Image (tube, rainbow, N blue to C red; front, side, top):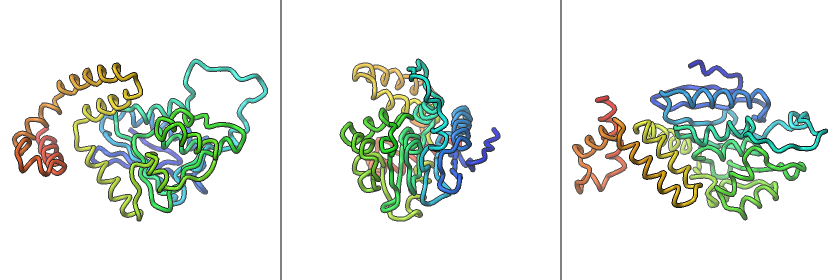
Length: 283
């Protein structure tokens, strides 16, 4: 695949696709960046080589500042509003990173605001920097509201009351608070620590069978279903993974390399990488 975009630099290594946002001066989501993100997410969703997608930024102060307000001012506002029966392209882009059968990770070293925060919150995981990462939904202060998934995604991430504070307060939320609220998975003290952890996690996930990654992600997303429906779907997806070549190979290799022995069980994290690597070498 081409992966040629004006505001994104991409590179691929051992199952991990990294997309670096670079839209000076402050990574505003201009129409060009928006179109590039739509194109990239559509392209990477179809790329069977990719197991993990990492989004980061070339600007240490900004992940994505927010959607371009100049562009919003050009949106039609003369006629009465109409409720659409279909998702907007922005909603579809956010749903794509939420549902594609690949892990999606945001390395958020700087600020994410407005539509940039909505995009980041749609990804599977977010990691930040202490004293540096900030999120802000400024829309209500501008007289509008978060219209690119924010009012639906944030309550699911941080709870109703905290989502109200983020959206109605239109104030900066620091990294420590965002981590405490569950918006950020973890925060780190230095960019080096952030890079080391996220890059290691991405490579680790990319070691597992692609079918297991995609189906496990789908099952976790099903937690938004009613409890009974989610459990029934989980059982069905488990049956699907059981029938994949990756599952059979990895389970047999794990048993041969120490799974269910005292020594193997006491170092499970390391053992997972070892048997996955051995199974990959044989495939």
